[in-house]
Image (tube, rainbow, N blue to C red; front, side, top):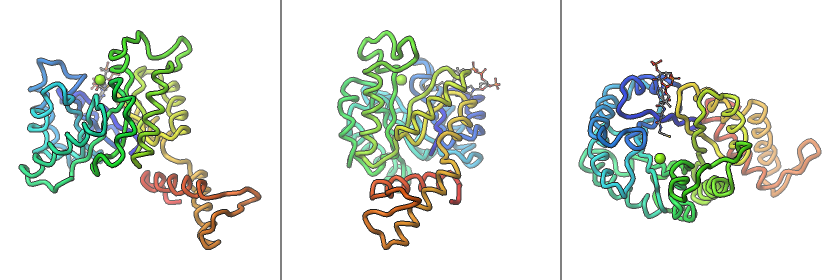
Length: 293
Ligand code: COA
Ligand code: MG
């Protein structure tokens, strides 16, 4: 999973384009991109579209439901679980307890629809409330359904009353950098993927590329998108280069050849266990992206 493209759930035209976008995951949105008076319509459009077209796309299908405090989550799940999405994105998650709560709901819907117990995965957005930012360490062990953690800046701005999330130079300000960092740490603590948030200037592909490169450097393995044009840039940035994959394969092979010791030397440089773990993680991502190092 490298790219996750948001598609408003009430637009058949965009669903069509999203399913053909080349994104690894399509997030069919029932939340912020759908107006309140359109929620019921969006549920019906989204469910019909997924049922009709799920086999025509290579993308995994997630549905972003309305958050647990809205009173709309159950209606969303009732409409969408019968068409068996791969996962649910949970916005405004306050802690691992919210993921457990959603997981319990999913278990009932899975049983009612004859789906295997635990089939549907969960990706929470963990920084949209102040409590959420402070609780990213609570996702470890919350649910075997967890498929990643991601973060968002817009709702956090509203929650804390910040007028902007970025400074004049375009850098996230401290609160948002903290939220981003807490996402990386929370994901690592929960042994799941860290997924970077959206880049909203969808015509600025150079800016997107720069943000992807920083994200990948810092430990994110995927990024969300809001426009189909962003998908190719994200996929490229989060696919390990053939050189990096070959190097990782060489590190793993050197440890194996030496009988799996604590430390080896390769081309005059020391490699110890953390280097081995990094190499293994990069190889997993390379293989998931279809490389064969
Ligand atoms: N998924 C699928 N198709 C999309 C899309 C998306 N996220 N964003 C744009 N498109 C389509 C447009 O419908 C348009 O199709 P057309 O050529 O058949 O008319 C084409 O791609 C080009 O779109 P463009 O004109 O460049 O942008 P726009 O002004 O139509 O749309 C947005 C801009 C921001 C409204 C649109 O990108 C969007 O809806 N993004 C998703 C928003 C969202 O889900 N937000 C919630 C998460 S933060
Ligand atoms: Mg939002």
